[in-house]
Image (cartoon, one colour):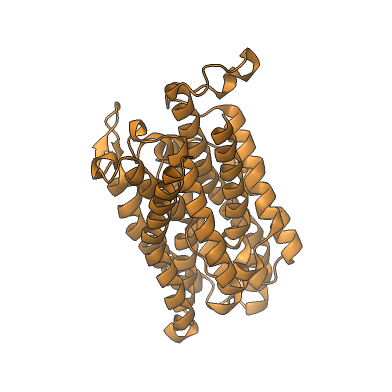
Amino acid sequence: MTLFLLVLFAALAFEYINGFHDTANAIATVVSTKVLTPRAAIIWAAFWNLIGALAGTAVAKTISGGLVLASAVDMLTVLCALVGAIIWNIFTWWLGLPSSSSHALIGGLCGSALATAKGNWGVLIWSAQDAKGASIGLWPKVVLPMFTSPLLGLIGGALLMWLLMLVLRKVTPRIVNLVFGKAQLVSAGFMGFGHGSNDAQKTMGIITLALFTGTTSGAFKDLPEWASFLRVTEFKGIPFWVVITCAITMAAGTAAGGWRIIRTMGHKMVKLQPVHGFAAETTAALIIHGASDIGVPVSTTHVISTSIMGVGATKRLSAVKWGVVSRILWAWVLTLPVTCLLGYGLERLLRSLGV
């Protein structure tokens, strides 16, 4: 039970860090275009993060039972996955790099599960189908979307911006800024909703995995009746108390802000006007919301970053500061392997110490 409490604390810590680490996803553009002040933007994003986090559980089910074999996971596995992801998130936040919290958690889980299984790669679900015939596994739910979702963001952002430029070519800049200054409030809220609907669910999934592990291993067999809500015997539903706890925690983390990453995405990558911010946020939010509906844990960071790049490139290619972009890409490439190694190493270390 003590180990579960540590897992729960680590999960909520990860969710809180995810909130302020990925705040930039929802508000960097609306801050950089000066449509909202930083404080107002954070409050706006936190509200929509909370609403989005309550909108569904498809992504949570993918994390809890669609990536690694539950039989190969124990409480220490989950703890090490979370700690590995937290370490990487704090490190990239300190550097001001918008890395993927989603991939950090998935990498940590895969690494720690491999360690628990003593190097048996069969515990990782590469590609399979669930009872309803839907695709599950790392390839369809993580690896393929890792490449397709940023590409969709890049192309979609450029196409939407090009379309807006075509429609608005005879409208004065003053009117464009006035209209899209208001419209960006909607797109920023939609982006916050999308972020909550996808990212908050990942921690819901990992907590449910821990609850299932504790129930099936017998760790919860002596719980008093009032604590029976901790017992989870199957993955068909995410407990409501888990949903509401994660939603509130992520909203609190978002409210704390993440200024280092906001500066990178909102100011250093490309200079934006309200119409550009609207195009980037709308493109990213549509992609993320679609992924949430089908249970795909995409990186909101990757999608909004490439949407900003696509929008910026319509001005001219040199408008995008490609030196900053290259640093971001390195963080993307390294996230999965580094967190996998962290999860593996932490599990081996703590297991050897008798935890």
